[in-house]
Image 1 (spheres, rainbow, N blue to C red):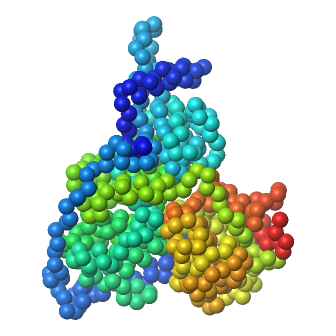
Image 2 (cartoon, rainbow, N blue to C red; image 1 turned 60 degrees about the horizontal axis):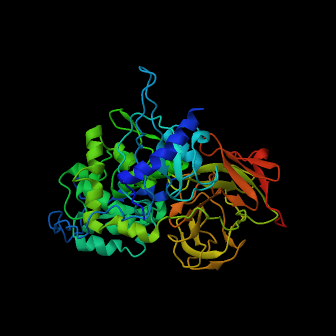
Image 3 (cartoon, one colour; image 1 turned 45 degrees about the vertical axis):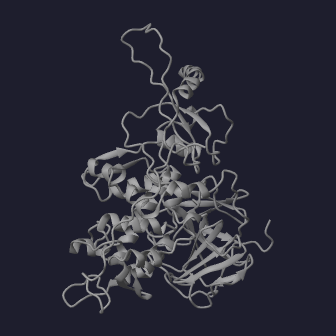
Length: 544
């Protein structure tokens, strides 16, 4: 079983050198942003002197007990502690006589073992090469998901990249099956720090610290353990008490008056994590920029979970040394994470890969009634929040007026399943029957009106009515429904190796978010926010 780390014995490298030499020599010949309503109305319970978080009236900020961080009882992962494929450093070629003194020595190629979620185009983008120059002794598809562990030989063209250490498994970043048994409230109360007595007012009313953690985690599909570790690392909210007003108002270290308070700070942080994770996964991101302006090329061998952390910490660190220390130092966030929650690599072994290469989308229908014609108003864009996985599509019903008009049309189920959430403009359907959206396939329907909305716990069939399209659940410019898929807690990109396929209409991304098309049998529907004629799409009475 392979470790994430780049580990191979000398014998292994020697065994690879001869065939690699042969290979190498042969190569020489909605609105544009989604926010929940809470984003606009979140306020913190305040005392008469300043608008900051306060404890319950019976407690004072200094009365919260401070507990020491737990001591790790888990040994660090060894070279066989994780199931995910490793990448190895460049193999040395056999010594040869220099027949042309003064000419540059050819750089040997890189041997890379594919990871879960890899595709040939995304790998080529990370390594800075054309897909056509990547070779392998194994057969693989140029467009589909690669089998984890596929050996690829890639020309080495990058001379300076950032650190290549794997800092966090993918399953510990997304809200995956590894967190199903995690009880946020119990953990926070047992830790006894500032968070255990914190309250904040959102549009849904007063929320405790643990309730805010759970809300941000489930809405964004980000692991609650990771949110707690980040909060403790940046401001000591979990086990202790923040030592400054700044750490109370801006616990994630991002100082912006519009992002004040726990909910806003966590929402900002998960947006950065999502950009790093999913843009790396999709082949849209290959560098980070520190606050002082230095740009760092991301090491191409990294997994999405590690890039998510690298991207987040690049947004809150001024220089390279602090950025590296936050991720890889003895007192880094990943080291704190292990002390708080045990070995993440051991948990990863039980659930990864999060989705197998032979995964196929279940049969899905368009999200409105047969016989009706709606507009395709949004191509691939963020599943939740203003930034993140480009996993969502938007559809709008016909209307005589523009804007947020009341609609009598119905949003319908694209597939059968059980409603596991129905609140705040959201309907989430678990499609594998276990009642958990962190396992298997699930579908988010956003901007579903509270009027006639289907209740939580309902079992539904394809085509059943879920509610009316609306503007509820975020900042939008017109009535519509926004849909996005997840598998094992990971948002599935709307255009990629598993593109959205709705009644035979297949999604294709444009050059920018919200742009794109749906195609079927030579027909094309172009995403247009104004619902113009070329965006119309008809849901046939008889589905082919």
